[in-house]
Image (cartoon, rainbow, N blue to C red; front, side, top):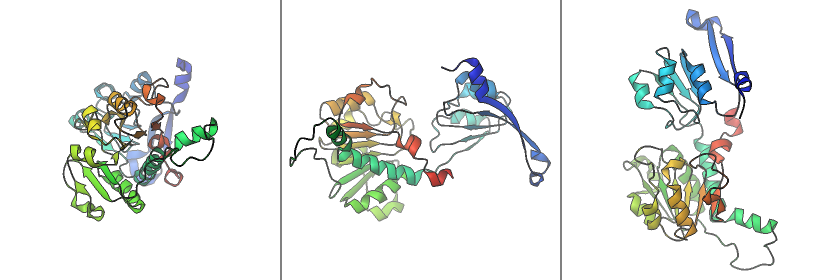
Length: 304
């Protein structure tokens, strides 16, 4: 852990001089910057936020009542560099009349592409196959060795057919998917191009060959994918989560994978993040993990 002097060095103040086009209201802007890829320590955030008029934060920064109280009445705007905003205490923010900005569509295409990559990697058992080649497990050709599951003629269930969910489904359709199912608050006629069927969460679990979770984290979706959900899934089903780790009960997922209740899982999000290296999920060959949307989702041309 960094000592006090190192932390102070990463948190610096500066004056930003703006052109006259903004008039007298923005002649000078004082800003405090946390200059590190590591999340800002809580104590430093509370120190720096005091008296601030605006805050630019990340998904890793918990902006709760304590932070808002420390900021005081000057705080008028919060901008988060993320699609999700479950790290923001929205009820408290609304009470104080603070405006919020976020980036709802900036990662839609990148996340959809990488979700498809994670699905293909998982269902075709690529990590297992690579390890077998490395450790000498590939002895000779065998007709059924390392066989996985294909998308052609399959049923794909999407939990949360919003911007990202729809972008994922569009990319999967050319693989020959026979049927799309989805669940959410209500049917979405605007997604008619997929001929997707709006079903209950239970039916989606029972009938899908591939289950993709791309919903927002809300009180209703927290822990949605639990023991009951996994028990309804087919033993040959593939489970993919690129939404939020807390949508899944990880202990129940581990049991489902270890017992063969479901075939395999691909996870881009966990609770906590990063997952401890001794976590039981990491001992399973049929559970693949990446940090695609967390890091690689920021594709180069978007960053530029």
